[in-house]
Length: 467
Image (cartoon, rainbow, N blue to C red; front, top):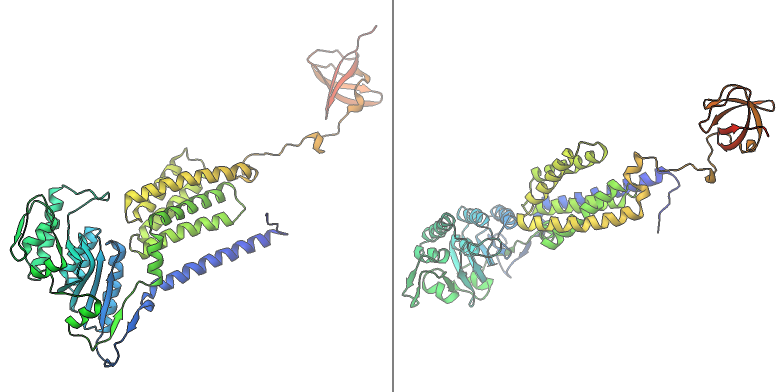
């Protein structure tokens, strides 16, 4: 259904209302990001002293990346503000980025509040490093810790000696800091390190990566206790009389986590590219442009809240959009277009957690957007931007347009050439002087002429021969 507007003011008013709605949504999300602590939930044990320092439980359940790092920074900050007695890191993760794990490990080591890691599923790869930085470790029966070999984005083990050596030394340092067997930590990260553990009667040969079950971890001194629940951990640290506070992801952080999923990011990029392109090449709708801005806005907002994107990424992307729009209206022989495309792609890719996946998502979104934009242009090409530069209307006589009075009444009329016709001149028809032209023949003055054709103001004659 097409919308009709009685005046341009109504259309502008609709666009202004849409922009206000967009700004309101962005402000709401910004407020949620500025006040993430609103999502914190306190669960006090019955009969606990009101002034008792709380035990704070922080979940570490997602892939270890910049988003988790930002969440933990916020959680640790709030924990210090509450002057908590203890921090329980509830760990269940398959690992993630080494650089983020190192930052999180440093955060745990420097915490003025005692920490205990509770592994209730898996503390694999970088997850084991985070657990080992805690002051104590408790493990759920059936859980495991270790298997910390360095892998690339596809899951293949990295064979770079420098990278492996660095990561192995980090694992070793974390173990030594808490008085644990450093050789075991090295065997978790480097398959070229073998280790014998007489406590459990097990030897890990070179070429294998070490992983410990909960029971094995307790026996070799990598975990202090087994715990079936967080309540068991609280009893172990003798904090039964203290309130328990669970710090959860805020609404904005959950939204960002949803937005940064690969398929959602790809969808937002598709909406952004298609919407902006349609608004540029087929202007006047308004809605595609608003949807395009929303798509890009949510993409960058989610990645910014998750800690992936910075202001510089958004500025680079915006610069790309501006350069592409300038290229549409001002020809630069493709220079501005190329620079704009590079800036746009760089902004999108740099804002993502995984650059390879970001490139793939951007490529898919771009191809789909081209298809949609081509279809829209085909059916709405009369509204295209090129019509601002090209006169597409044809003023034909069958539509009632005439540039001058047509003299079809003169066809067949006979007159006299008043001037030589070479090939144009003047002829007299009755008492009316008419500007005429021949088909290329020369007709001297005084000769008889006859009109053979009339098109608008152009009257064509030829010499009338006497019988």
